[in-house]
Image (cartoon, rainbow, N blue to C red):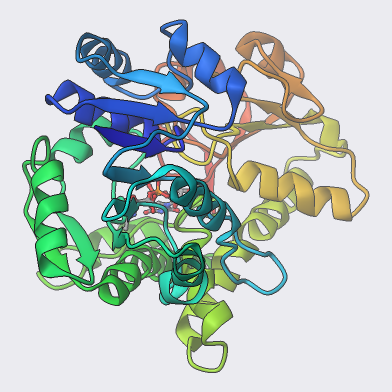
Length: 402
Ligand code: SAJ
């Protein structure tokens, strides 16, 4: 039996996938409401293919509980927040989860950590807890790689990394993941697995920062950054990502800071890149100000932000550029801008609308913060508005860009 600890964005799909592929799975989460929702047969977030996977897992006998189980294999996928001031990872939830596993597990159990941690965290924070317990367990690090919006497909098809002290244990865990994963599974040591995960997200963060910096350079001198990137990317060895209103989510906007936090005097490019990305919402605010002046819009209550999630077609708002931007505004004691997101039906911010037409009727300037499919099906409704398109997706005439 596999006990999956933490049933969030990663733990839940992973548990469902294992249960759908013949493994006996019990999912454990400390949040009793979340467990109750799952036990009522409802998923806790929206994701392509998740409901179908859930139905398969139920048929496969998955159970959900708040209790840790006594078994020989655990997969821990609890959050690893970072301290905004020190930029260091906070492994508190992982340490607590492992501590609770140690209270119930038999000797020789294998505990796989899927949560993203900074390199060295297992050595520094988790091994001491294991040592103090007196139990002989094997720690493994198998960082997740799936992208929100395409999680189910990527769980099945992505290559994976498994870090273990002992090759045989690594191979045993590999066999479990191979029950559903069609990608290549590499077995390596724990330190390498920890580092690769953070490096992958850092690579993407630095590339996005480069695109954002290019957008600023091009804005300064009236050049079209999208056309420039499009042409550059036709070079066989160039692949620049796209500029945007900022970087959100719990991965790309967070993980690279672990390296800055741990190696402040070495991680220079990474540090600057993260600052560039974090500065992007303020850059968009400046653009809004310029465009308001150009169009004689004097009242910022006539400005509306389209999109509250951290990226398109997901319902996850963690660290979203729109939230970051509202925070900058708040610091300047400005009245918060109007916001609408078709995927968010619960109140998260002030001045939030739940009806697209009502939102549009109240604003003259629409800022496209997120490129949801919804807006691509509604260009007609935006005719006559002043538009700042932060993603270069709007086909209407006279649209402003970053
Ligand atoms: N973004 C841009 N420009 C781009 C691409 C993305 O501004 O060209 C922005 C997005 O709008 C979003 C943010 O970056 O705000 C992050 O989105 P994302 O789609 O790049 O990535 P995440 O955070 O959803 O998922 C990433 C993935 N990592 C990599 O692609 C290296 C995923 O594979 C990881 O599993 C995930 O982080 C994680 O959990 O670590």
